[in-house]
Structures are given as C-alpha cells and as structure tokens.
Image (cartoon, rainbow, N blue to C red; front, side, top):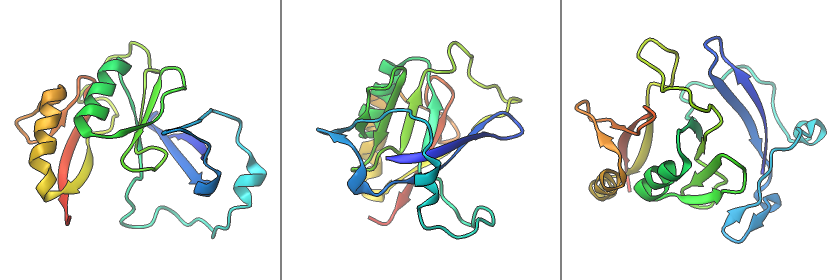
Length: 173
C-alpha cells in the first residue's frame, strides 16, 4: 500500500517518509489490508511522479503516527474502541494499524520497543499529537475515550498508559 524509508533524527526518534501506492493496488482482504513488511522496491518508488524535494513545506500536517505501546489488547481498547477507529491490519506480529475511513492507517501501534519505560520529561519524545473531529462529535468522543481507559489530564490533554498525550481539536463538520 505504501513504500517507506525510516530515518532516525538526532534524538533517536524515528521518522517515516513514505509514498502511498495507488489505492487500486492496495491488497484488501475483507475489511483489513493484507499488509507485510517487505524490502523497498526502489524502481517502483522512483517511478512515482515527483518534484525535487526542498524540505517539508510550511503548514505540513502529519498524515499518520506510529506509537510504541506496552500491550496491544489495551491499545486496541484505547485506540480502536476509544477513538472509534477501524482495524486496517492486525496480521503483523506485535502491531495493530488503525484508521478512520478506508485509509491504510492513521495510527500504527506496536510493542516492538519491548519493556522500555515511557519517556520522561527530559527524554526526547513526542510531546503530544492531535485528533480533529467535528465539534458536535467531541462530547461523545470524549465520553467514549474516558470509558475505554483514557485519562483526562488537568491541562486538557488525554493520556494513554504509555504516556502518549492527545489533544482533541474541532474542525468544521
């Protein structure tokens, strides 16, 4: 469904730079994508029309994130049930890929970091991420999140047990 490079920034955080294949080539198996981690096909990647890269454009919004979690069953409850996302791939050991709608994934969750404790305040880390939903859906979404195990912090961010902080934002619906 996509081809990607995984890079580490100076703090050791991974950044995925990817290009989606045409959706007609995505390998659906019922409601899930038949995903695999395969070697990068450079010829195919380079055949995609592109312009010379000159840096990340101002105002760029990340299309998806990958988060390390301690337990996939707990993550499933928090992210699939709590946020109302669809499972897109559950066949890769130690990973779960979720999306709103029919995209391949907006959130990738995995246990590949092992028993590493959550990052502390002085550690390099993702400080927070945001989820945008129509204003009229936010109260129900907040209740759904709390019922599934998210914690609402005093600063208004929701937190999962691994320390990921989520800010709900409204968009015109």
